Amino acid sequence: VDASGPGPEARLPLRPGLEGLHPYGAPQLDVPVLLNVNENPHSPSEEVVSDIAESVAKAATGLNRYPDREFAELRAELSEYLRIESGVRVPAEQIWAANGSNEVMLHLFQAYGGPGRTAISFDPTYSMYPEYARDTHTTWVTGRRSADFTLDPAHAADLIRRHHPALIVLTSPNNPTGTALPLETVVAVLDAARGSGPAGPDGGHTDSVVVVDEAYGEFRRAGVASALTLLHEHPHLTVSRTMSKAFGMAGLRLGYLAAAPALVEHLRVVRLPYHLSAVTQAAALAALRHREEFIAQVASLRQERDDLVEWLRARGHAVADSDANFVLFGMFEDRHAVWNGLLERGVLIRETGPAGWLRVSVGTPQEMAAFTAALQEVDPR
Ligand code: PMP
Image (tube, rainbow, N blue to C red; front, top):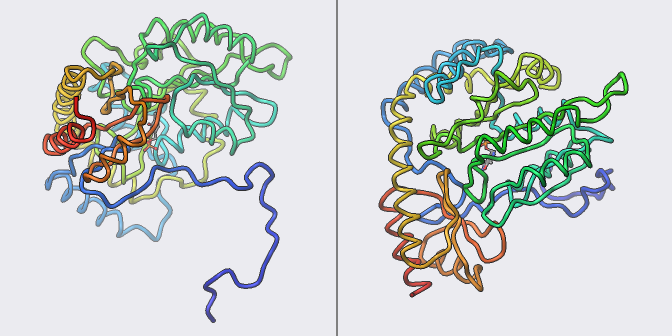
């Protein structure tokens, strides 16, 4: 039997609101220099690769069994990593993980969003958030960031008071702008969130959950603190991280968060059983054993990022301050033409952010040389 092709027609009952929508994702093009999705440009070292291979081979001997549903060992190692990276001790029970921070976020929306509930964020920001809202029937409301892409606490507090959001998503460092929020701003939002959530079972207002998405947290500049340092005082705060960026493990799909025990309990209710495969757990544990190597690599990527910002500014570009592994730069009358000119020269960056801006990820020194050479040709000054 050959089941290929559309075959006979059916009128499938697609959910209203999903008609004509396209799946999210940047173009995956076969181009020599890929600087479009904020990946880590360094493939894992031979030591990391062989350690992962050995660990996965060992896990494979037990693949007839379901994996550890509570991924206890992985939580303990993520907790240890956060202690080393941020100086904050978060017990293993207060760590949650899933297949990329995308899925961690979806769990948050599944637990706290839903019909009649609202989540808010501040544009320009990561374009996946509205999709988590759509998929969980949560109303999505956006405020705005200021001209320098920071957040005005008074504007945030006003939006929170008006909408009683179940979830407030702060991205720091923000994608696509690279902006890290000062802790004072996060604290102001946490204070405004107290008693500003939707009505609880007793009719009184709950506290909005404040999610600080620190997918790019490890790339922050010296002197910028992680929101993890606020966790012990704010039980309605959660900080999410990922192994996709600093760890160079985007292909692994492992994101995680730190939060108060009660919040983690709520996420356990909505996850699918055995959502983290034994292969994922084994590979993540193996990569975490090499954390010192990744921490050193992040330091060199930060330096390259700062050099890139300086080079772009010296050419007269507007450049947003970046605490991430990418840089938003402009301003271009016709940004699409610049993006396309770079692509014609084998360099793929991202056409995203407010009008006139483009985003480039930090690559290897060779990739940065290709980017700067191509930009000088496309946009001579
Ligand atoms: N948050 C932000 C701000 C991001 O930019 C990304 C990826 N581009 C993610 C979360 C998701 O990352 P992952 O699912 O790979 O952990």
